[in-house]
Image (cartoon, rainbow, N blue to C red; front, side, top):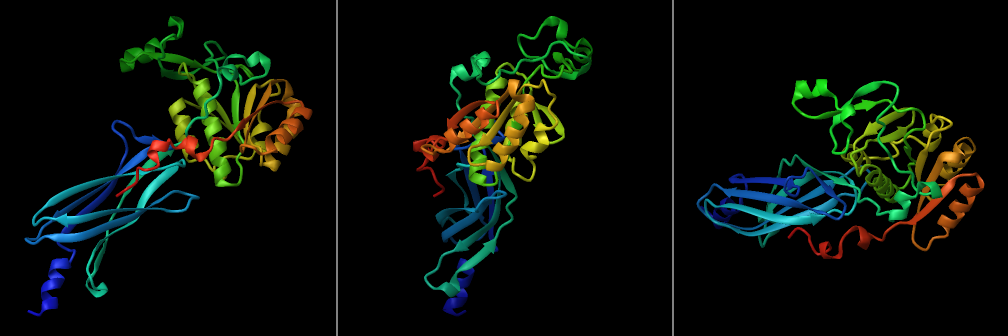
Length: 351
């Protein structure tokens, strides 16, 4: 056998079993922006000689975003060895990330001797937006024009179903029939009278970076409204959804202009006496115009939360424009990337 005939079997990859997967933190099916997902690579060497210099690469892809390359280098795998290598990858933007285009390549001093094998990688990680932290005044003083606080309706027109029991729910609201059937405490869910609980409206900006800022602000609203287990009323075009905090967070993780209706299509379906919180980017001129057009009909109970870049004059311009239309306006500065991703996390990358 020639020297090359000896080397090729040593470097060949068919005898390697390689698997690649994304693993979220223990007991969680999702991440927050700034959290790390673990890339786990397992290699089983079925031959009786060692392997050297294996490099596993892949891409994390989410809709509307540039692929994020990831790589792990394994310097040595013993004969008949079984190696598991882990590396953390910090993800700073929301979305549903899928691991795709994974390959394993063996190193060699000569290019012609290198071997590459494509891997089947069917793994994904859901990254939720990091909720914007409101001050306590924004939540507790709605009478002063701040963020209206969501309250569960214990009375209404009809029983619309049931939801999981939350400590503090009155005994008269417990759905005893569902409790007898399921063995779990359930609370009756009533249809709320128009304007009884605030409605959330999200105005989708065209740029993905701006949408991320709006999603974080909306996630902060959801956190403020659901501290006691309430559901959020979200008006999206002609559809009104009532979702729990976790359901709404997952919805915001994948929200995009493709699945969130323009402001004009959502605001027109609100009742005249509806209480609404509208989340918009200060740079979204079209969205601001649509809100202003609806403000004359909803001004008495319309609160607009405007997200602007730090140091940008857009916030004051939007505040003045909407205030003249009769809406209550609250403006906020988008946190810098270092505020979304903790500094200690920047160094955490796949090996």
